[in-house]
Image 1 (cartoon, rainbow, N blue to C red):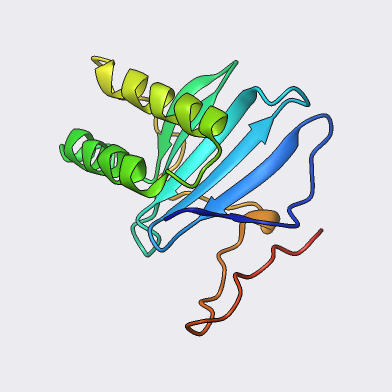
Image 2: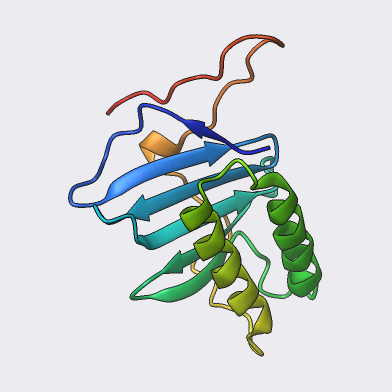
Length: 143
């Protein structure tokens, strides 16, 4: 299940939020009214990490894909289904927006542009180190 990482610094005027589990990192930018303006759904958190990115003004990007791969559709469908199972703990407005955009992405006839072959995280998005069982979730550091 996705859980929110607290202590993420905002990027005025946007509020940034981070939700994490063992497979996903969901980074969300919201207006002060709560509208989602950008999200990055990172999945396959290992050497094959990918990120499906949606921006209100720029549309979709799917980073980390091999442009010659024919597996994009299948792997994206699997990630979307897995997200739906992992997201009940994400606030409803965010969850509904992300799920709606993911379904919109799947309905597109052409795949989204790939900006880069590997997804590069910003400094504030660095992976969390795994905490021992029973400990409290890690807090993100402020820049």
